[in-house]
Length: 281
Image (tube, rainbow, N blue to C red; front, side, top):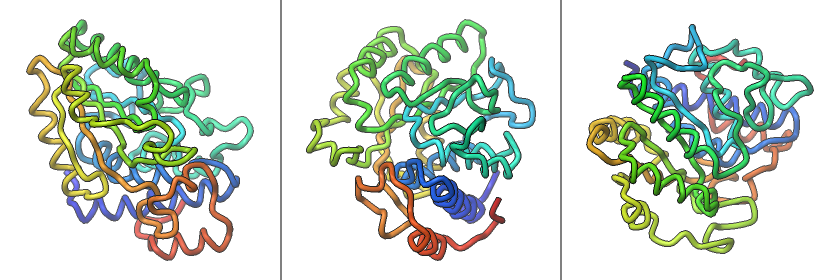
């Protein structure tokens, strides 16, 4: 088990990876990636039971994670690489022709750690529920995790899946919503207000927890608590409050950094705010 200090060092390095990857190709999505760094680091380095050195698509005997909001691939690829799924130097290929690290994760390139193509928003919860049902059929007691954007909740398929999971008592899944209040065209309140998400998910039959997704200690503790809520007849949802662009001051809280890359000067500023701890790729 890693200490909070060790996890914080990994978070700093992952943030460096994110801004460097996006800058190198002048393309990608840094805002949501930075905001979800603590969550994915806690999940892969502390919470999940998984085997990076022997990746298999069926995931038998392991906890599985499904990224539904696939545009935050920079943080996903960084965490996968730094937890041992593939070599760090492959991060140099992000979004390049014939790379396994496409802008949105895909499966046909065979990148270890990626089990579904994602980026068409709204689909990931359905896939995660299917994987959770497969675990039950296989008498596999491991847990399914999934991550979703709050803007993604404007997709109707999410709510169909939510209704199904509760109705079928799919209680081996812990889904998390990145509740940063921002999406590509503005705030979620401006684009399509989401209302009281806690009340909505509870009305759909889910067991709902909340956490500050940029407080690493709270993320680790809440994920531990969420595991104790599984197996009790209800799917589990975590509403995770984050800041888009967290960790880089000029990106923080602005939808403008949803999908644009920093220039040379901005990259230097971002790296100065996240001093190297574990070695750049």
